[in-house]
Length: 392
Image (cartoon, rainbow, N blue to C red; front, top):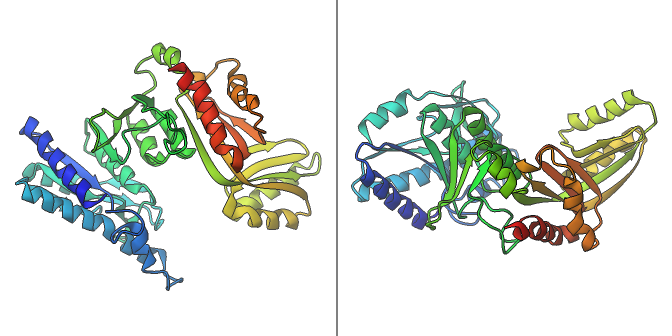
C-alpha cells in the first residue's frame, strides 16, 4: 500500500461515513509499498542480511514496523480530512497468538479496548499482520497476515462483512498476467476460494477464508481504484442450483517450482513405506499429489526440497526417478462435485494440443494436473478457454 493508495482509502472512508453518521469502521492496514520500496516488509528484512543468526522473535519485531508506519500515515490522512480516528497496534487491538514467530496463528481476540475506542472514535485503524503471544511477545502472522487480522477482528466484533482491498478488481477466473481474458468472479464459495488460494491464487490468504467460512461472515475482495463491485465470498447455497447450471468451472490456477518423484518400493512392505513417509515428514517436507500403489509411491514437493528428498530416499536404499521444474495446474469448481465425465472434459483441451500430463489428482471440487513448466501457460490458457471463456 503506497501513499497514493493511503490517500484514496482516506477519501473512501470519508465518503462512507457521510452516508451514515452513526457508522463505525475498523480499518486493518498492511505495510506500505512492495519489495525495494523503503518501508516494504522485504526491504525491512534486508536490513538483517548481514546477520544470519538473527532469531525469529527479532525478525518479527523488525517486520512489524511496516504496518505500524502504514497505520500512522493513514491516521494522519484522516486527521487532515477532519475525521477522528484512533490507531492501534495488533496487540493493542487484542490479537492474541501462539508463539510460532513469523507464522503465528491467532488464538483469541480480546475486543474490550477496541470496543472502548469505537465508542469515542468513528474510525479505528489497526496494524495487520501482528499480535502478541500469551507470554506477551510480539509475533507476526506470515505473508498475507493482514487478511487474517481483518477477518479475525470482523468475527470478534460481529461485523456485517469484511472488505479486503487489493491491487486487482476482485478474484479472477485465472491470473490475468497469464490469461489475458480472465474474468472477475462476482460470487464465489468459501470452498472454491480456499482451494484457489492454496493452489496458487494470491488474492487472499487461505487462513482468512477458512476463518470466515467457519464463522459465517461474508467477505468482499475489491480494488480501491475501480468502480466494480468486486467479488463476494459466501456460502455455496446462496444461488442454489442456478450456480450449478450457469458455472461448471470457477477458476484455473497454477503453482510452479515443483519436483515430481516416483519411488519404487518393495511389494507388501507397508511398514517400510510408513517409515519412508515418516522420515520425509520429520524433515519438514510437505508432499502433494500423493499416489500410493503397492510398488510405487509418487508425489510432488517444492523445488527447494528436491535434494533433501533424494537424501532421505537413498538412506532407504530405494530406486527413484524425479522430474524437476514442474507446474501444478488446478481446475476448481463447486459445481463439478458428483458430475460424471469431469476428468474427460478437463483432459480434452490438453490432449487436443498434445500436452503430456505427468500425474493427476482430484477431490470433490478440484482437479489438479502436473505438467512440465514449459507447458504451464499453454495449459492454463487452453483450460480457461475451453471450460470458462467458451461457456460465458
